[in-house]
Length: 155
Image 1 (cartoon, rainbow, N blue to C red):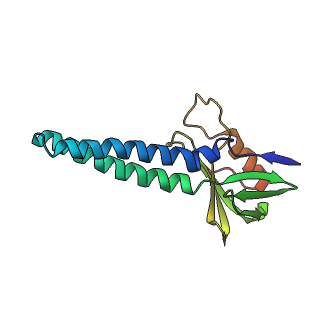
Image 2 (tube, rainbow, N blue to C red):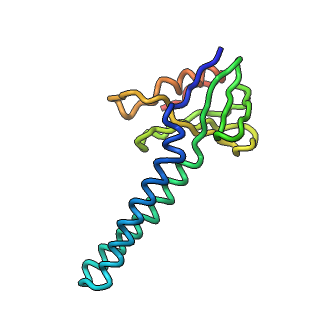
């Protein structure tokens, strides 16, 4: 049995989107800073805010994007890949499963009992689907909890 449980867009969100966003936003910020040298003080403040937004936004985006992995289930085990290396994780190694509901792509995190090549957390994007109840976890989170033999968290 083979089931890809991460989004098909993982590669795009991990490598392409951060690069394009950072370069384009950076170009705009650099032009704003360059134009602000000859402008009024309020324009300089706006340019500095834009430059700070570029730096903070790029840091946040890289922190989220670089930690994303492609995850699939094969033969009763979870396999996580960063597109260069792949590791195998037994269901018993999973301590808990959480989902960040506040980030648009709603990443899921597998918290592991022991350190692996990718650390003690495996973060991936679930397959895209329209969820109107944004405060609820993706159905795949419950499926993974059952797969790992975990109890759902108490609310």
